[in-house]
Length: 347
Image (cartoon, rainbow, N blue to C red; front, side, top):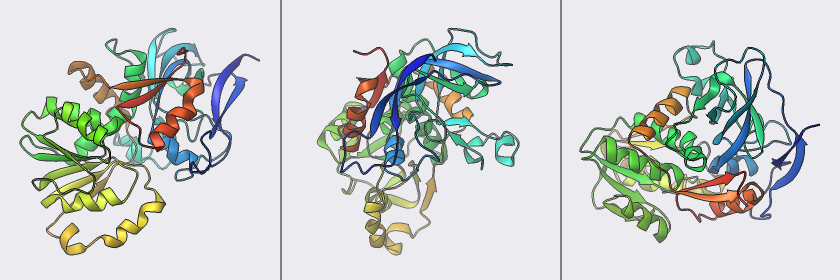
């Protein structure tokens, strides 16, 4: 047995009752199958989706499982027929681990909607470990500009932010709101300032620290999630895990405006906020709500190219693999500035 260290989820947890949902384990290094590559993991981003997995909002189909879907590492081995990457090449893995490749959605390049979509770190083992495998067609070359830790959040927070922007159908000069200001939203703000220099960004965030961070990156206004913005907004992207910000965002939309909800799940504890949804003040006048579902490979590859060109350098906080529980609990408790990243060789 060739062993590796991993942080494993053994069952669903209530994070109000435990601060250590993941268990350190020594397990065998996986063997790549046909057309798969083995990756020696260097860094893995920490995402709110891991909290959704741990708390059962998007539960893994089986246990134990190794979480993590913002993975950067180097090719350490190849399975039969895998020829796309050479040994030692740096690659990344995103939330999309594989799709069927033959359904209408896949043939249209929208693998994110494939009924057989397989998620990294939920449906199969992910990057909270020293090694992992992935089909070579679902791995991405990482631009040299980024360190391992900087590249990790680009693979989910950045790519899902890119998809959210696309679904907004932004035009320069519009007013954009961002609800929540964690890993994804801070990268969206950086993208917007480059691609649409005349767009003004308004940020809604619970903590004064997040609000100050948003202003430091160029937001023209930052207030509390429940505040009323100085002006009605053309588009709003919601990146929170709760329903209250969705209802509050609709109040801040112009007639004909669009709210894009960038979340894989919403917390049930906050569902009573929906009871306060009022048709005439929140939805009338042709306001739209659109959800973001996963990412397609094109989102990841296009965003990596854009991030390299601008460049977009994420703000990161670094943790060791063994400190994964600490990073998750800080995310749970909204102690956020940029993106949290596990680095395998961090002391």
